[in-house]
Image (tube, rainbow, N blue to C red; front, side):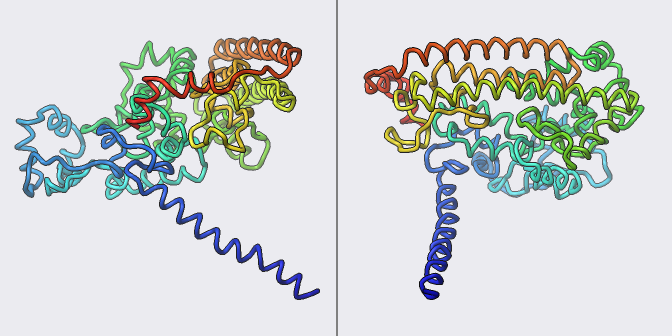
Length: 448
């Protein structure tokens, strides 16, 4: 009997010893294709990807050969690309005693040129690079993990390259420093201005630009910002109103994820946990550069109350959708519409994408109208209300809560009809053929 028990204990141990190495091998194999990320074998990169993700895709030009030092680079490029050289001449790189030449960043051998990545910049700017890399410990979303987030998403394989190229343009903040410091001037003064951030932080999923510029801070910046001295560091007393970098990169620290109390509005988190208490104190200390500390604390409490209102509405919607799924009354159901990327048409585990993170799929794929209402609640309404609260724009908070109320009522009305009609029978092949076949779909499948 004792021997039998021991035998059963060893079976899962031995299975684990086999499966764990196989898992690591599979991940390495899946990342070894011509693309990048977990699905690298399922797609091919466009030429422009070399500029968004140079470590994986950049190849030196073949139009010039030879080894050249910095002064020779400048002499040649004054003729070939004078704008780039003028930007470099205006930068601190050209004004220090030991100039930082083109060859220091790009290499000297023209046949082995590189595009500078954060690792290259770290040879001189180690402190900033280490702060940036340290951001990874906070998980998604963060600048340091932005490229990984894009490449490891299933929809990156499935969507047309014209669309995902636009994604990489912003997600490349993880793979090159010129997302914030424009090449080749690399001006800190330029990076301190809101425009350096809103190049990417704009639009419905992250309306940072709209909420900031509509706040008292943003209005003051729009009125007076051109006259501010942007060469000053991000310290108390140097600016009449805060900008993105002043709040999110406290005193120039290259990290933006360390004060995220509500995970940038994406997640319900207990604000009174020990970790969040530390973050809250950071918020209050920062706001106290200009405001009374008690007033600043009250603004956080107002945000907490807004978050509770938001999640109460989202949970109501989720409960309704889960009841529909349990009754098999969502239409069209998951087996009546195209399968998700990475799945197969007859996958045993296909389910409607209901719930917080799974709901993101509704942004990209054909779903039922009631699921789309839920997606708009948490992706647009939830994030819009959070950004409005975080940036001091109460009109935006009210706007998106009204939108969420409308979505929730639509969900209740549609759910009532779906429950009363019961399971709707339909010829699955007809619907799937509409979405899975056709000129656009076939072209994308062949050219991905």
